[in-house]
Amino acid sequence: MKVLLFFIFLFKSTIFSCQEINKRKVIFVTIGKPWYPDLNKNLNTFSVSVNFQNRFAENFAYEPFYTFAKSNSYPVFFNDKIKLKRYLLSQKGYSIISNSAWSDIYTHSLGAKIHYAFINNKKWFFSFNFSLGYFFSKASIFEVEDFNYNPQTEEIYSYESSLLEDSFSSFFIGPGIQTNYSLTKNYIIGLDLNAHFSQLSDKKFNSTPEIPNYYNIAIIFGIKF
Image (cartoon, rainbow, N blue to C red; front, side, top):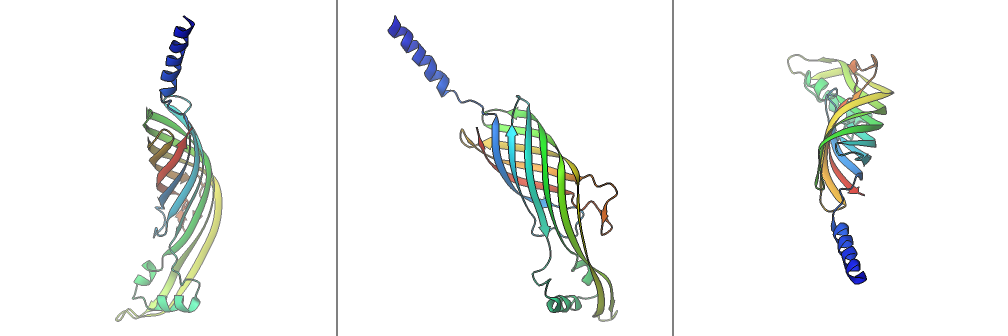
C-alpha cells in the first residue's frame, strides 16, 4: 500500500512539474526608431529602453520603464565654419532654407505603463496600454533666417543664421500597443508601438510647440520569470 501511494505521489508530482506555468514577470529591453512630428528632418533617430513588466492579473499588467530617444540631423561638417559657409553659399535660392533645417534633440523619460491585455497566454501577450511619467529633454535648431541672392541665377550672396538651444522637463503621457511572443519558456521577442506627448504648458521652442513629442516603434527582447 505504501509503495502504491508513493508511485501515485510521484506520478502527480511529475505531471505538475511538466506543466508550463505562464510566468507573470518580464524584464526586457527595446531598440527602436522614434519619429518627431515637429522636426523638419528626422535623421539618425534612435531609442532604447529598459522595462520591467508585472502581469499581476489575467488582463492587467504594470510596467515601470526608462527610455532614451534622440534625433540628430546635423551634417558632419557643421562645426567647421569654413565648410559650413561654403555649403550654404553653394545652395540655390530658397533651397538654402530647406537644405539647412538641421536639429538635434534627446529625451530621457522615466515612467510607468498600465496594460489591458486581451491576449495573455503561455505564447502570446497583446495589450493596449497608457503611460505616464516625467522627462528631461535638450534640443538645438539651426536655421537660416535671411539671405540675399541673384533672382536670375539664384546664386547666394550672403545669409544670416541662428542656432537656438533650449532644455526643458515636464510630465508626459502616451497611449501604446504592445505584443510579444515566447520563443521558449523564458525568452520573448515582440513589438512595442507608443506615443510620447509632453505636457509643456504653453512652452514653445523656435516657434514650434512641444518638440519632445514623438512616436516610437521598437523591437522587444526579454526574459520571463
